[in-house]
Image (cartoon, helix red, strand yellow):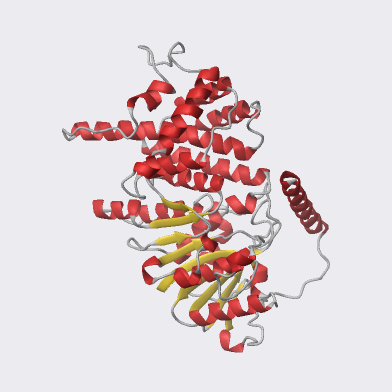
Length: 484
């Protein structure tokens, strides 16, 4: 039912003059979905309070509650179309009354880790783009059919929302920015193995896939006490995100996965001066996939000891600095990080090897990130002692990965198994750090166990690479056109 509802909503928004892309569909679906979710959450809290003889005070005042403005019901339990706003009346109410009311929650909330604060923050960042009140009425009617009351319903909804994010990435130039393949995230979380009580951080949070997966991993790791449950809800997961839409999607994704008031801040992580990070600001675990290929302005670069315009390299400095001593990290980065010969890249690899134990490098094949024609690696490291031996694993799924043939968890099973003992195999080997070239600190992936192959590539491989490059070029052109 959920899947068909999402499809119907996309069809409605496609007709609306204010929504021009898959990004708009997700954004507009998100705010309506959030208000319906909030209504179901309030009902659950009211029922729980009643059972214990307490009185529940609703967060949202009566006239702005879902059942009053969005879906007033008749005696038969169906929407009363005489009482329900539609057309210009509906858009006027939403734009002039509802959004300003919800924005105020940010100023009035007692602290930033409350759902009230998140409501205010979300509606400060968003605006209603659905121009036709008749289209908006149809969207509301569809979302009103959804239920978030049972664990199974919430689980299904979180998976479908994740699919929407993935499709949004596949549809345009934001693939690498918004969506890291879920099997890869699951594997990274397994290898890093956070514990209850750890603080977990993603400074490039995007759609919050890493934090959602870490939450699922810890929630299912053991039978949790009520204290541990509260710890997971309020004092475990932290994130920062620069872009408004990704910020909204990240918060929504975490809420649908079961974190009521996510500690995600809308800010440019890289605008923070590294020298200002104190012990109290540090985290036990970093899980992240910082944006590929971005460039930062000169004033942002001034916040970092190693000056570079490359966004991912600045994020790496940030992650190393913000980890506690003994803290663990799993970070996705372009594979050129291991071999670039510019001074900043060499200095950054030196910093990583000297201040952290880089114990594992997972080399991913092209096509792992659909819509982003780049090759990536995952760096696993622990802060506090210098690197001695680096274990490499070169993932070889035996097929070309892409949109129609994505990465799956089985592809990564051998890596997870071998990583525990750092065993050598056809796909894995160990490099002694004392033997690397100290002039370049080159950490390139060079599999000594690989038999020499013909340098001639298969036609299919060449065609796939050409297609990826064409898509990347088209995305860049679209981005330029949008700026003009």
